[in-house]
Amino acid sequence: MNIQEKYIKRCIELAQNGLGTTYPNPMVGSVIVYDDQIIGEGWHKKAGEPHAEVNAVKSVKDKSLLKKATIYVSLEPCSHFGKTPPCCGLIIANEIPNVVVGTVDPNEKVAGKGILKLIEAGANVTVGVLEDECNELNKRFFTFHQKKRPYIILKWAESQDGFLAPEKANNQDRKPIWITNTYSRQLVHKWRTEEQAILVGKQTVIDDNPKLNARDWSGNNPARVVIDRENKIDDNSFIFDDTVKTIIFSNENKKTSTANTQFKVIDFSKNIIPEILDVLYKNQIQSIIIEGGRQTLQSFIDENIWDEARIFVGKPSFGNGTKAPIISRKNNTKTTILSDELIQIRNYD
Ligand code: AOF
Ligand code: ZN
Image (cartoon, rainbow, N blue to C red):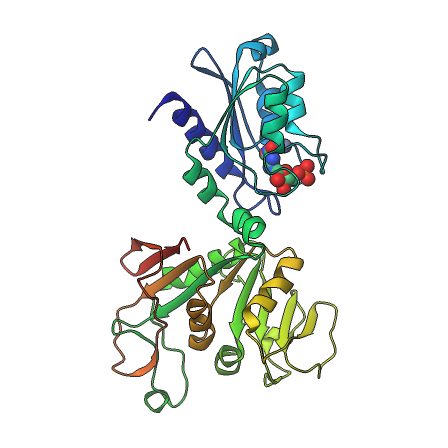
């Protein structure tokens, strides 16, 4: 690890303090270094509040050192007036001569303009230090701005022998059969607080009547997104309780929208995935977790429109039943074992 990597690593660490509170902004960290000593640090805490660089500059006691210092930032300093003034203006005004940037800001309002302004002002700028790590830190924000769609997480639990559920005949009274341990079940609620929306198909709602909220972990409830082509879902289902923003996609407008529940008609004769994602993008939804069922999950896999899969493989075996989705290994994927029953697959296509 060289000196620049060492300080960008610290920026990433600082940025992570903003986990869960910066949306729709990215997590960003910044350190200011003089003579191989950290003289200031900061991170972006909340949208509308100061950016990382502002907090870092503010924390420097002897401001005269800024003229000889290097400022490290995990994301390109911004160049625009948003909710706050541009950070490259702050760096220029304080005459900080050296700037080291982890990665370029994908937001069209910035996208290289911050770096250009700094260079034009005579700063010595280095770009792309620990770039992959800095991109991964804000994977949702990057996917949203670059691909113009939310970051997509697929989640399911399968039995030891690859089934989502046992055959109905073996499970007449439809009692839920838990595949995962109780901690994993609770973890899923934490994941729900980390994404802006949760998406399921109609069969999951009909079979399980889920609440799709994060009741076992404190935090924000995601918006609910449901695909129900022919309006088959019962009006008394929990998803219609109007307690959180809910979007239902169908082919015919049979129901009236209420305060939080919106019905959206889309064309089911075409591939619906791009249209759904476009609606979510326009609703500023930067990430979704897809929790079933099989057909819905498999359709995103077959289109190769997904970014991450989190798969629980539990202890029970079912022998037969609904087969779990299948991810083709020919994709550009990386698999990580996260625990004795959790696998994560990242899709870099
Ligand atoms: C930075 N440092 O710490 C962050 C940046 O509305 P604003 O003024 O808060 O601007 C938000 C945009 O600024 C956001 O979409 C992203 O492009 C950039 N975020 N930039 O220089 C920071 N959080
Ligand atoms: Zn900024």
